[in-house]
Length: 397
Image (cartoon, rainbow, N blue to C red; front, side, top):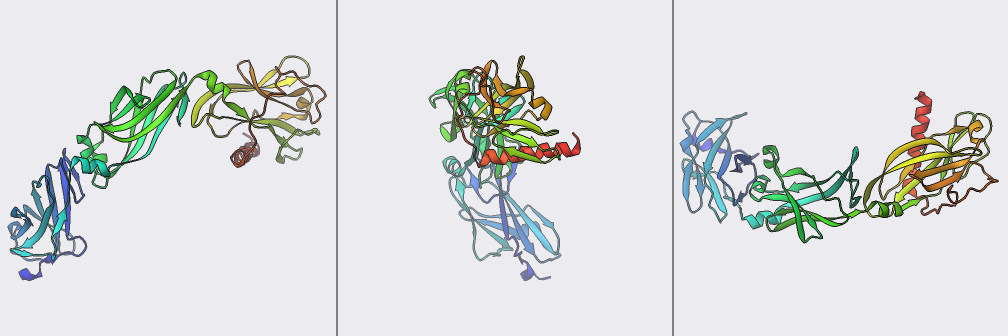
């Protein structure tokens, strides 16, 4: 085969990468921290007498360098490999040549990125702070200071130039009071796999967060450069309890034939029918994540209230439904109603009788204030809860 049959392959004429910190990044840029530039020319055609030195890479302002290796790939295609030091502080113009003849009509220009230019194109997406509660980690903008074990800061780092240079930026997560006073800092470390790519999810557990109320700021920083910052509010438990709001109680009803429905008020039950309350509770604190130990009790016509369900629920500024299950018609006939309790405080109470003849005192909670109505979110959750209840009944669980 003659030498004139050597030509650039149309699929990928020249691929440029850079190395830094032992990581190779396949991006056609040269960051300020680059240790070596690597170029691969994809060439079509074969000749028995070609050598690696037949291929050179013309670097504007520096002359030509020879390929250090030729490797064959599929379909009569070969790769010519070049490795060289960058021109720090300036772009590089590259031209692949075979025995002195340029194989490209135009040179490939590889831009140089200063530290400042790299930071300018480094983006932080979905910066999120979560509170680690007992058994759960919940994204939030506020939390109860006495309840959160730790805070967790998560974000996605995105750089079209590759993420390996992030290792040179001393990237860290910082906890501050009102964006002014530094409390603590945690370094952000990338694995080699993350550093070689353009996107990475990074997570920092902010252990030992002070358990006091007030405004906090959690940010992602590189020395004197702020990439992103989130504000967070730590509330005291009394403020959280005062923020709780209830919607009017709904009722799950099961007919004697096993058909479920949702009622806005109780009905007189027939034999083999069942009834149970559904409480809806949420907080008006924006983005709150907290936990609330509650008890749902039945209030008998005689005797002391008895527990139907005791649980700890996670409260957010969204809808949180509580249903203790349903009682049969004989059991419902023996009670006045139901109430939702936090410690000794009645959060809400409701009747089990469509026409209650006895009104319970404010301590019983029938006249507890109703703060919220039902919206599409709560209606959807109610429907899902009823479907779950129906499914469990049908499977006998």
